[in-house]
Length: 525
Image: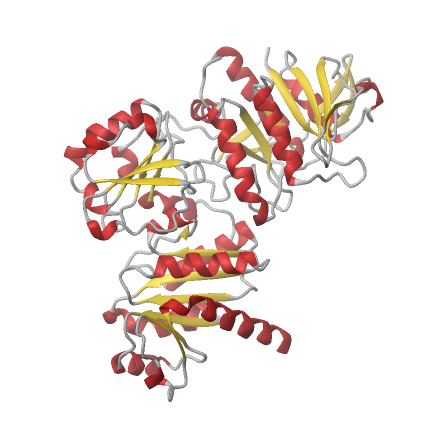
């Protein structure tokens, strides 16, 4: 028997077969935890139906009711959800079912930290995607089993599909229409919605834990895949991820001083090492490998083995050698794995894209190392001002700074690039995208084609020095409203040009200029 928490609007008794409730609590908006008389709860509540679905597929479930949703608005504050998960951690809950979540980017960081804490404590969380089918926390978190319902009649009651490369982080698509009974008599069929899909998967998870009490989340996902209707034997395992939201403490192995660029890392803690002998595996949850070190695979495979043996995680940043299939080389079904060469699979097997109707800024980077900082800074500033900005770039190292990675090969056509941008728009439903493209001098001619096809609202050039050569190139491109960020200190000599030029150290001033320009153009339209 598995102790299952239903975090919802409370479980009532009497209407469905949901009598086995060992505890019923409520977490108030003030974060007070108080006992609730389950007999007083509305017995056809959303939480009651979710509990009934769990019991339908796993009758042995021992239920705990955690009420966080307001009975009238059916909403709660993010801090109530966090408190509920923390309560589960502290009170021996094995599985938590969540038919709620947030699409507000301002909640993501604090929820992510709580989810990772729950993962480390062994709490398995099954969560439903938002009914808009856009990026949802916690359902889209790697350390959660994310669920959504099938919108067509392709799945029968109890069936589900495992999404091997879910770009929205939702691994399971299942039937949400379930026939509910009381004492063997039919009462109703549930609606088609994501919140009634997750309890069925919660029950499936309980069955797995019942048989394998010490099983890990990664192993549970493996078994869920094997029981799905789309399982293919001998297929690469489900150990690949698009996001690295699961990283808390990483060891970065690199031997090139130039690669020590981590001033504002996305990871809470990152420590650089040049020698594998200096890395204590017990101190870290993740090993990060960069280009130069990967090429020396024979000499580093011992440290990779140690991390895999401890069921820890591997990140391979390899912009320079994407041809090789590291998915096979580092295959480890018990751990987590991120590699830039795998990310293309997520775009190939993605949701339908959505035509962008929000601002797109493109940063053309002519420098060696400044693009990531500019993208990270601009994205953070837009978000701090209340705009859901998504930063993306063609350098995979950007994921360490919370940027989306868009893999682009040299022979990739502009239609495929546009497709990837629109896929991300479909997933995140953001307010603005800031896209960074690394450009070589010999690639300058392609910028005009990119601008014509992607039609960015603003084109930004990031250069070490604004030379006459660069000016000539921009004039040939005939791009309106060009903005330049340069490392040069003396920019007054370019004041006669029809561009807005900013020093690299004036990024705050540059952001205000961009924001004012976008707001002015919005008002004008």
